[in-house]
Length: 289
Image (cartoon, rainbow, N blue to C red; front, top):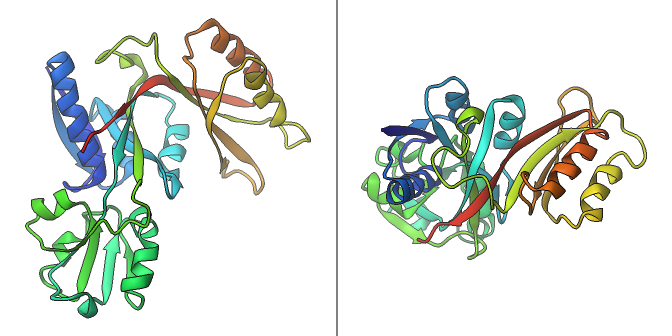
């Protein structure tokens, strides 16, 4: 049996690095082989599961410096059939890749907006006059570097090796403890079919919209978890895209959705919300690099 795993491509992205780790972990723990399928965007990676093109996707959800990856959150909200199976935490070390002979000759730097933001301090100090050009992924612009020796890209050391490109600077992210959390996502009906049972999971992710923007509308749902002693590890608002000032709320909880306490909390939560979506319960697996 071979599983297909969608991820943001081309090869060499951090999403692919997380997907490679997960594929190796899956083989070691279950014996299941996996093939990687790169897609041009995070949204397309998730849509690939919804449309049955792949069995799983590995997508970034949160960075320790720049916060949530909104494309992942927005797409999960739209695609009802997806469930989180596992979280992976990948340490991120950015490198400046270029065929330029020196930093002084660089005029443009390409990368994913998250990577550019994570290196903005370094870029301001060492490349203050360059043009920063956002791309769909950290590796998308690597093919441009050989024809244009005044250009550079921010990507991983592994990407430089894959594309046989020189590295001008390493560890250029502004904070050394930079890491990104990824979710392994599947179709709901295959939830937990490829690793440990859903019992004894440590986290649950959900999102909800509120019926009306009234005083206390958000306090009441949050009080449910506080009164039951369930800790929130993240809360984030996103526009509903229906009307200005209307929001969805994404919450990560340090609890298993299958426990009686969480079942009670979720039942009560549904009475205060307009739409409630449970994205799944899962464990967190650190990636050693």
